[in-house]
Image 1 (cartoon, rainbow, N blue to C red):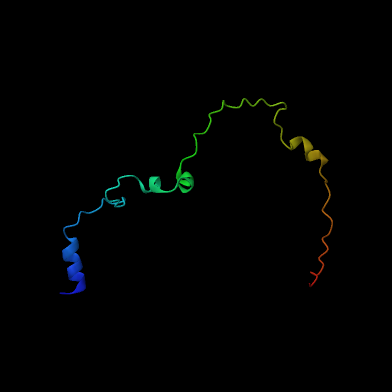
Image 2 (image 1 turned 135 degrees about the vertical axis):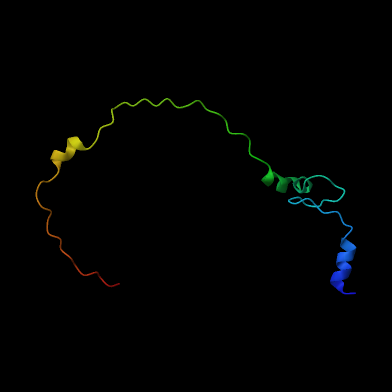
Length: 89
């Protein structure tokens, strides 16, 4: 008999582990609980977030746009652009 056939004959009576779960044998604790405390602490959830009251935001000044500043912009044509060569490093 071939090695793979022997393996399949031997494993055919084995119970299948449910999908997404690890086989833990006789110890039924989760794997994280069997770790040392200093490592297990990294897997523990954070405390719940403290609920705060909603912020009451009252504006001191009304919202305005830029329309009142349009008359402050220049009316003439922009200055002529001077193109200079890029310096080489």
